[in-house]
Length: 390
Image (cartoon, rainbow, N blue to C red; front, side, top):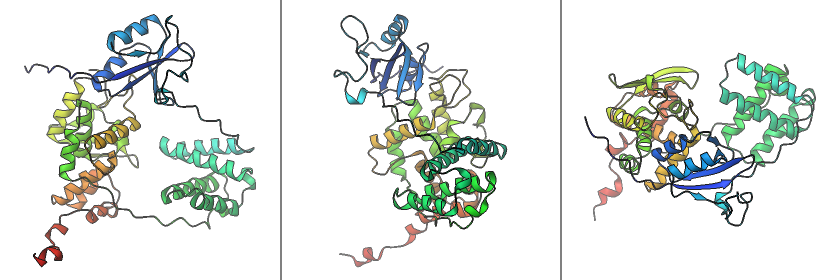
């Protein structure tokens, strides 16, 4: 049996501040998966996504647990051992402050709360995903606050003015503009039964942009920049399977089929299941990563909260940090690794219909975008400048 390698020396920095309501605020930086496991073992710890701090009960036991797991932790308390003032003390740098709570939005005009609630119930019955329901509700609230009128008082010119405001004054992207229109079309057609308000409003022309793709050398540099089994497994799963970030965070151990070299994607985009590739090297990386996780967890990438998977935002931040650490000038995201997976398969001669199935695209028209960034055919063309000689 192979001896288990010693864990790498931790470079994590821990700052502990006083909080409100009998809580401590703990910030963990430059940490690896082993440091995160130490923090997870502290009883009562809860991640607060609004402040980007861990909240821990302010008790002697909790302080002793922090000192035991992180001997170099920076406790910012006064000489008497009492908590320092709120974290706006001069002793605390700006980067250590929790984020300010956003101002409370002004209330919606009368009648909108009931209408948006009815719209939410309808989206649940129609099987809209939680993310779609959240986005549509946000668009409805923004429109209601902008127009300042009740639902039955809104006419087509107000909807057109709002969409024009988004495009010209807010300079939103075309996809955001189209998404806002989809939410308002659902609201007025399905909920308010007033299709004439939105039926004449055109949808913005979709902008066709080419995806960013990493080269093989850049993928190697990205893997070389990984400092923990968690980071290495994350990159290998993305590049080996081509899954979306929302699909990766929901991936369970039971979805992996190493014998067949495949992984099952549960309820991908459009609530569709599919199978995709899974490299043997990715399986080895996953096994190494799971050695540092709880043995009874069902998730391939468990999160900070017990029984929950990792968040999409944590994954995005990790991949972005790895791209910067590897010195890659392109912006590296989980979706860039998905584009890279598809493009490299196409350059290796894989039929585009198979790539469509692996990515979960409904039509090959979506997959055909990778033909514009593939070098398979372009590499055969000789540049005329090279024919000039010296």
